[in-house]
Each structure stands twice: as structure tokens, then as C-alpha cells.
Length: 71
Image (cartoon, rainbow, N blue to C red; front, side):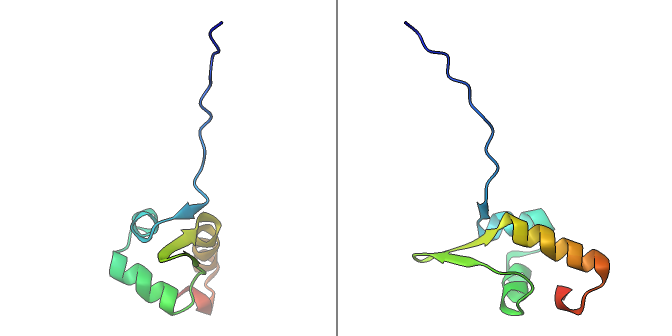
């Protein structure tokens, strides 16, 4: 019997630095500056650095609200 397997689209929870920079429309260097300034949190998985997608959304929301932490 053949089983039909449906692929469900999965939204990434964690983005690479390059992916996050692309989402925000900034350079990789600018993204690292923002992380260093505490604009949004990132996580380490071993030697890898990842940015939670919801952190980027929250950052953009703060930018819209004019928060001082948005820099």
C-alpha cells in the first residue's frame, strides 16, 4: 500500500546571521552591530549563532514605536 505524505510548510524559528540580515535588509556587519548593541537577542548552538525570528519581529515593532532600544 502506498502512503501519501503531505509536506507541511515549516516556518524557521531560528535564522542564521545571513538570513536575519536579509530579512531586515541590512548587511551582515550591521546585523552584528545591532546584536552587540542589544537590539535583539541571539542564541548559540555550539559554535553557531542564531537569531530567533520572533526577536526580529519584536525589533521591527520597536522601530515603529520609536523606542530608544531600536538602534
